[in-house]
Length: 246
Image (cartoon, rainbow, N blue to C red; front, top):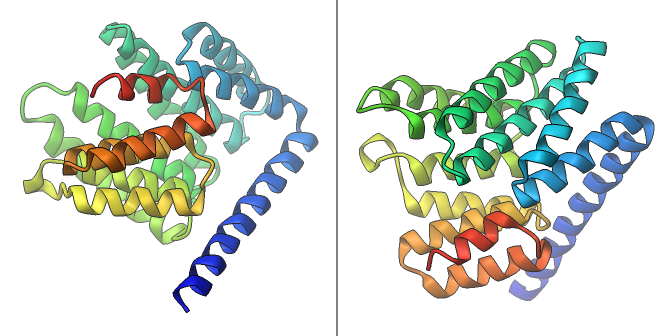
């Protein structure tokens, strides 16, 4: 019975992934401009390369200017800015990292004006508010943005309780929050595992799972998650950096 359950579970995950990939390919085929931008975005986020991310930003900025009512274009522009924030942070450029973060928040909020029922957009906004806390000064950033993180993730779960991106964001909320404000490494690990089950192709989420497992003291599990991330995306800068922090 347990073996049958595991087989059914794996089959379901494969079906979900196939449907997602098919829908993504159809969307990109129907909108070649979106497809071009997503390829730039994927390359930029993999390498955390600001030159490529700047190209992606120029691309989606042009699309949002031409289609000011398109929530998807603003969402993708917000994602580009979120990765630009990380790329600047890696190189110690906090000033430009914060500027990119503020731009990301502004763009995802604009996306939500066009489509408030996007679970993806709400979970991204939760992540961005969480990043604001990491850039905050003293004890004031947490009380200001912590409740916003929780509210956005709660809304995302209400809209789509089977979205891998939503569970990944929830995992980061549990992982990064202090224990007195709801931080829980066990819940973080559980959320990341759920996310990888729903989307077994997300190399980034496997890296976050590794971070949570390290925090739990499970070095073997963390290494296994990192190796899976690198198998999925051998060029991943995030996976390589995390692996180097042993």
